[in-house]
Image 1 (tube, rainbow, N blue to C red):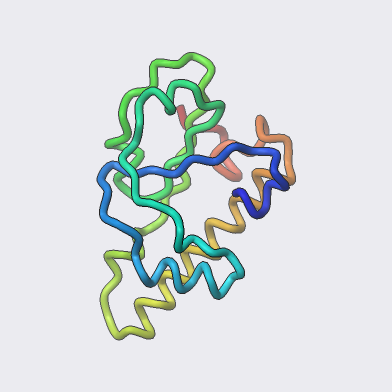
Image 2 (tube, rainbow, N blue to C red; image 1 turned 90 degrees about the horizontal axis):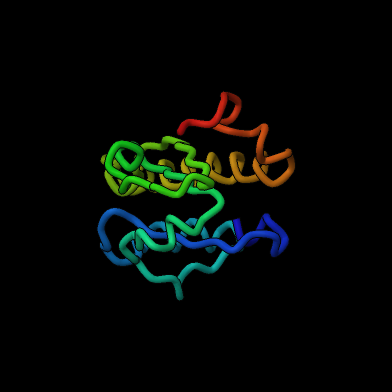
Amino acid sequence: MKALGSGKYEVKSAGLEAHGLNPRAVQVMREAGVDISGNTSDVIDPEILNQADYVITLCGHADEHCPVIPGKNVIKWHWGFDDPAKATGTEEEIMAQFRHVRDSIKSRIELFVNEDAADVGDCPHEPKF
């Protein structure tokens, strides 16, 4: 989002649990020209959630387990993807899953930043609240 949003968005990333950076994620993002090696693995801060304009959850169970967001102006969308860290198979197959998820997330972000955000929602469906 930072790379594609032309500085228009303040982006925060966090999860339900902190696990550290996955070296495979760092590698596939580097392949795409994005350096995330200095990022940290953080747990969601409810205060930040309530100040957000948009909260977008990505991996399967995150939508169901994300903390309740009482802020009335926060728009929540779930762009569900299989967690590539749970992929199995050969190293080549696992890396292919990481690349697939990376590319799918990029496509969603491009749609988000190129269209009126109010019309994007759950791409191409209505926002999921």
